[in-house]
Image 1 (cartoon, one colour):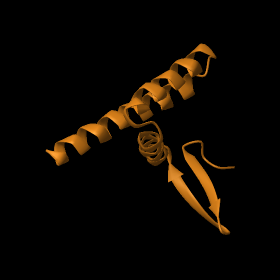
Image 2 (spheres, rainbow, N blue to C red):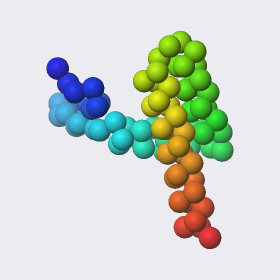
Image 3 (cartoon, rainbow, N blue to C red):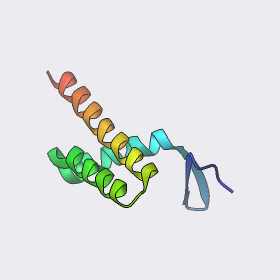
Image 4 (tube, rainbow, N blue to C red):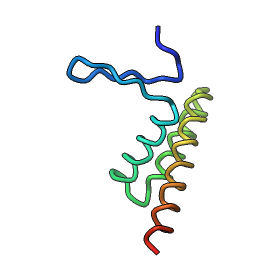
Length: 81
């Protein structure tokens, strides 16, 4: 059984272990690409939906994704100045 803090991905017959923090960063980057300036808002909406359904872990993770979106945007803006 895999540890809950890892997401295991199978690609071309090999496995890659990704920590929850890495998965959060990957999701944040993907949301920025797919949702642009609404990425944080989308992640917060997902968090609220999870909370409404009693999924406290999902709520926590989606809020972390939203925070990572903000962090990435802040870092990108600082570098671009």
